[in-house]
Structures are given as structure tokens and as C-alpha cells.
Length: 360
Image 1 (cartoon, rainbow, N blue to C red):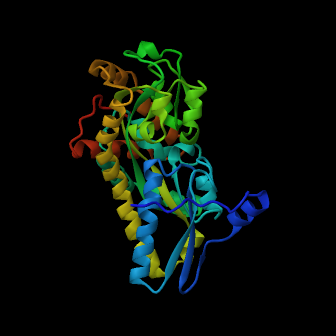
Image 2 (cartoon, one colour):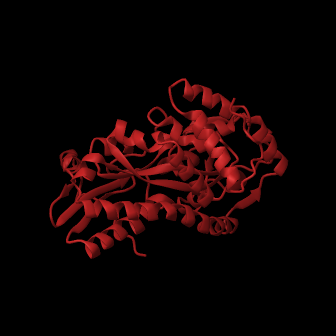
Image 3 (tube, rainbow, N blue to C red):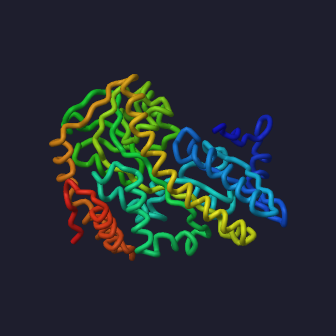
């Protein structure tokens, strides 16, 4: 499917023009609706690409087929309006109407929403990861309600990532080989490196290629699609399938003021498309994982980590979920309920944990 051209201000964008654009409120009338949609990630990142190639055109199609309204978008991908760590606030303040972002960049505002990261070596199947997350959100209303109650926005979709592995600029076989090496990640997944003795570095995908090329870090905890689409294979010629797990820790949200202005029939269609988009983030990532791995095999060295190394790594992190529960419960968050629900939901769906984490 042909992607719409990303939003760009005409000519050389001055600060005044950019400011005027960002402050223009998303508008809705009886027959014309304009929504500003954005993310800090480029469309080459799977979820952002699906926002542009599926969510936008499908929402427009259904609205215009089933109602009297027309729908148009102002696009702000690749950080054109909000950066990766600014999207939650950007939607909250109505700088954009709809935003997609990783909860990993909101460790203070949404610490519990990275809950699957606290259970490393989970399923590598993003459809299963998404189903587990859906079970958790259904069981714990706080997970959805907090967006509206604290951040003036409505959670439309949960977004699954493909399974995480480790791409590096050097070959390695044991965790000892990672000792003191700078390796990037996002938020809590940096804790997965604790046992390896690596030096964690907070990173963001838009800067990943430069960070690897200039040796700010020598590796990334990353799913294979990014290694392909962002050309990280050029600066990281080794990709090791560790199997850290597929994590559902992105979301698509809409500003509540914008939501309340939408006609009821458009709200209904928006929720339908958002639900379909949510499922597509799981199935699309699952379908393309094997293809991305095969692509990488033609370009760089791809191998599986030794199973015993993976098991030892999981055992070394066995106490960490308990630590996170204590820390988050002290903040008044339902961490034990969330993590126990996630563990049980995975098992109920047939997943066997290499280490069954104990939370008390």
C-alpha cells in the first residue's frame, strides 16, 4: 500500500510557522474533521508505519463511507511535531490530537505500563504478548483509566513489538564478553543487561544509527525489523537471538478535548479502527519477524544464543520482578496484581517461563 507523504511545513520552516502549526487546534464540524497525528518515530518503525499506512486511511475510508463527514490528517512523523519522549505531553496539551509512543519513555508518568519488561524472557510471539497485555488491562482498570484521569487523553490501542534480541558491533558468545560494554536500550529493558555486566545507555531509535556509528554504544537491545529498516546492520554486523521477549509497551492515544468534539458516530468508528490496528501490530510483527531474520542473514552474522546462557541470564534476573513490585507498590500502584496477572495469563495461553518469577 502506498504511504501518504509525511507532513512537512512548506519551505524553510521558521520557528513562528512551526509554532502556529502546532497550536492550531484539531477541528471538527458537521462535515469536515481534521486531526493532527504524530509520533517521534519514523514510519520505518513498524507501529508508526502502520499508523500511516493502515490506521489513517482506514479511519478515513470508514468515516467517509458510513457518515456524512470528511476526514483529513495533518501528519507529524519522525519527530516533526513531537519527539519520542514528548508524545504523551504533546497529546495531553493538544499539540497533536492523536499520538503513538513507547511507554518506555515515560518512566515517571507510566512506570507500570512497562510491566512486560519486568518479566524478561517471556514469549517472543507478539500476538501472544498482545493477548497477555489485553488480559492485564481488562483485569486492572487503572491501566486504561490513568490516561484519562491524569493525562487528558484516551487510550485507543495497545501496540505490540516484535521479540527483542541483541544487535552488536562485535561478536560475542557469553555474558562475560559483554562486560563493561556500552549497550543501548529504552527504559527498563536496560535492566536486562544487569547480569551481563554491560554498561547500559538510554537510547531512542531515531538516533540509533548515529549512536552506533560514533561508538556512543556498541549494541542495542532491539527487534530485527529495526535492524533492517533503520540500516543498523551497517554499523552492527552481529545480531544474536537472545529471546528477551516481545513487549506490548507502546500505545496510541487521543486528546480528550478532541475526542469529546467528535460526533458519536465518528467516535464509534475510531474505536473500531483502533481495535483493528491494535491486533495488526501483533500479527504484522509476527509475520515479518522470520522475513527480517532472513534478510539479516543475507547481510550480517545472525546466530542463536546458547540455551544455557539464556537460562543462566533468566535465573540471574529472577529476583528483579519482586524488586519492581516492591518499588511500585510503595508508589501506590497495583504492581503485584499486574505482574501476577501477566504471569498467569501467559501460562493460561500455553507459555512456559524459563524461570517462574516469584513476586513475594
